[in-house]
Image (tube, one colour):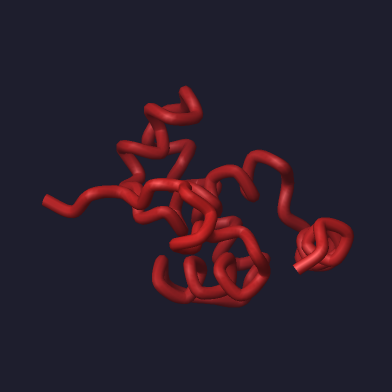
Length: 88
């Protein structure tokens, strides 16, 4: 997907740059705590951003948000070389 199209989609749904950053980390599989360390925010602030992302995207779960990110070119793919979070 072209960068211009991605930016249009994000503008259309009203996400801020910080929310996009958090959505991308969520889509990589990071927990709220891991995201908070990555972006240097409190875990509560990360939860608040994620709640606002859900509202903006019209989703209700992390999986739905991650799928939205993937569909709009914001989530890592095997070809991107971006590591996914380890589980466990």
